[in-house]
Length: 462
Image 1 (tube, rainbow, N blue to C red):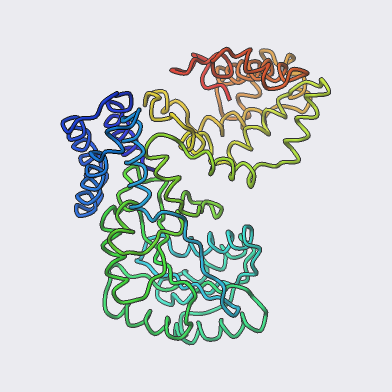
Image 2: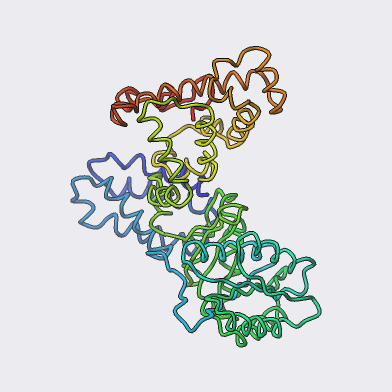
């Protein structure tokens, strides 16, 4: 998400970062670039106008002009205005009501509403330690109820059964009674979507809203519809008292216009981002972290939180102890590292949150793809346990067998073994001397001898 914005903002602000003096002329030129970047990202025109005016006004203020580093100060002004535009801070769910707290999910057809119900249930169970029940009031879409039942089982949420011949209001009322009797903390109600905002849809959801009196009414909207997402949310909010927005499919949205427009147009906060298809792919929306990513400064805080929650800490500790005892780093360990990386959203997910990624050429980024991770794991899976511990035995006939078993070429097996050797050498540097010794050994280069500007012929060294 935000790749296009990130590139344009980086180019626009690069010229002023090192300037010792700001003038009305160079601020005007920079803001013209920023304006074009926002319009290309499909940010709503009223939002663009106000944002550019606010930044220009503050950039020409005395505090900026008299600063020792006016270029850097201008970047800070842009960052602060982006944060202000998107809502200052993360607004969490307000569930401090008599249990069960009801969350009503609304949205258009195809916005990812049912999947978002499951994602939110999983997030509440794992992060908030809540006992969650889910129910589908979508009696119109074929298999909507069965889809939610399957997803509920996956995320280990209680599913309240319903059927297409029941009324949505009756389903919701019975689900509330069941959630109360079974002492659930939260009841998430999935509602029917429509192809557009129509009166019959509004009437039904108004009735549902008055029946369940939800603590949270969340509007689920597809980020790839750009500023239309904000306009749809506004139309919905005029008929129903929304408390927040869940922005879905952000992993496929390179523009980011919806994220920058919704708060300004609707006055409602974005509470969550859907960042993938898996039920774990839901992130709380932090405006300050998103602004940092747009300006190419990464999102290290989110990356650390992901590592803490998704990386198997026990497995990581076992590997550290193994290396400290002088035992070798083998292909089984390499496979575990690849799987851990995949749990963090793969290379693309990691790179999106690392500072300075906007400076890396596009052709280099394109070489770093998650299909390569899958291929490497498949090759190691095709090896015997003995081969994983003693890769030196992997010669001609063994390479042919491994390539055939993993559906790859012998060149791919050779490339993996080369990358593993580089990784093994790097791990040996950790013995006794720790990370500092290893970093001195790298001498400013990436693991495996990759210079910051490119990838070696052997591929990306994991």
